[in-house]
Image 1 (cartoon, rainbow, N blue to C red):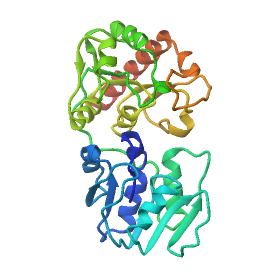
Image 2 (image 1 turned 135 degrees about the vertical axis):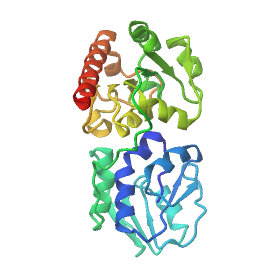
Image 3 (image 1 turned 30 degrees about the vertical axis):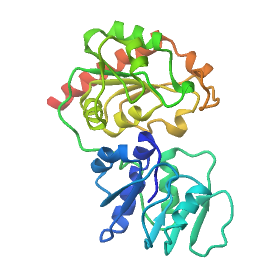
Image 4 (image 1 turned 60 degrees about the vertical axis):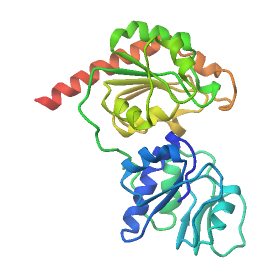
Length: 296
């Protein structure tokens, strides 16, 4: 299986990975994905062998019985998988393939990312449960509120000064996190920045009372651990990449745009500090209420 993308991409493919695990219980399942995601792969409980593979790099594997392209519609990802000489290859495509090994399905333009990959496999008789995306809890809930200002592109980064206003309002329970290359940005949001390994970030989000962030990998970590979240969306609509259910509040002003732009999307900029604080307050109240209900 090839999914050599980012953190959120991998987590949205968990139901498909687990569907393959169920369908082939005696097979060795190998996942080709970036090396830095090893800690996440270990928590999915669906992969026997992890094969560190940069995006669209040659795949160091030969002659699998079945190759599954969970990366995209090709053609580069299809070519990389065909180079491993599989007996069969399941993939999406935007073009036809004469190779009899290729079992291709037309790429759906508008489909939630979780459902997209479940659909690919279910169309070939491999049952998937799109709600089977949870990761095992990493510990008891704390009072920490994780604020993660980073995102892979400028279009999805809400301004640092607005995140800083949220952190000031939340007080000492707020924890600002930074991924690789995001420390300068995080320091604009709060003086105390938490950074560390990916495993430490996963555990921090898994045990937090609340997460506040944009449309980024940390949002999918919160979804996987059922950590309440306030998610700031733009320019990609939440109906394609947002949480499908759970204790999450999505802020979205209905404007789409270029997700690879350098500047924050205009729709994202319409989200105010007040909206975020109102959503955070509601989420924190719901979280406390839920905890009380559970303890009764």
